[in-house]
Length: 157
Image 1 (tube, rainbow, N blue to C red):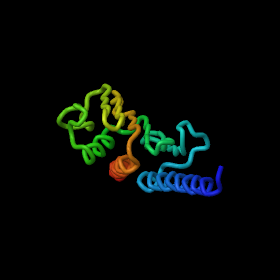
Image 2 (image 1 turned 30 degrees about the vertical axis):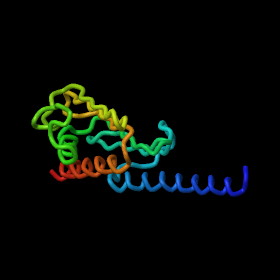
Image 3 (image 1 turned 120 degrees about the vertical axis):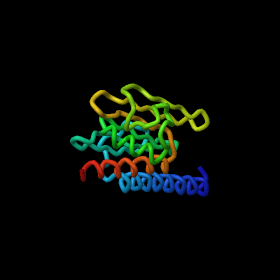
Image 4 (image 1 turned 60 degrees about the horizontal axis):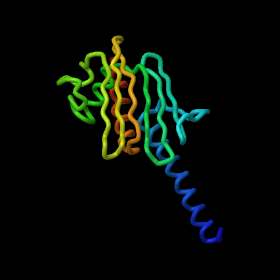
């Protein structure tokens, strides 16, 4: 490889590594329970969290720069509040009260333009397991921030 090509590729690699680090920093700033995972199950850096009574999950960035979160057993009221702030009620046909009042079941949306996927399983126990996949980093940061705010309100109650 020619020296100038090798240097350009090294510059790109350094910029990509910085992009991954800053994306993770943004995820953690928005949702402080996230910590670096020892093992990665995505194709890029992975953060994990687990908080008693609030759920568990992961956030990661794939090798195309798309972000994904997969959270399990998060209080439905907190998820509903976060989603209402971001998308408003009824975006997934869960009803006029949004996810805070959604009936148990699976709600799924796929964006054909961006290939993003949104899947929410509302459980009988008042929790939600959900995945938001292949979206922009800023979209995941917004969801994490709103979810953290909603959980903080529940903690204070």
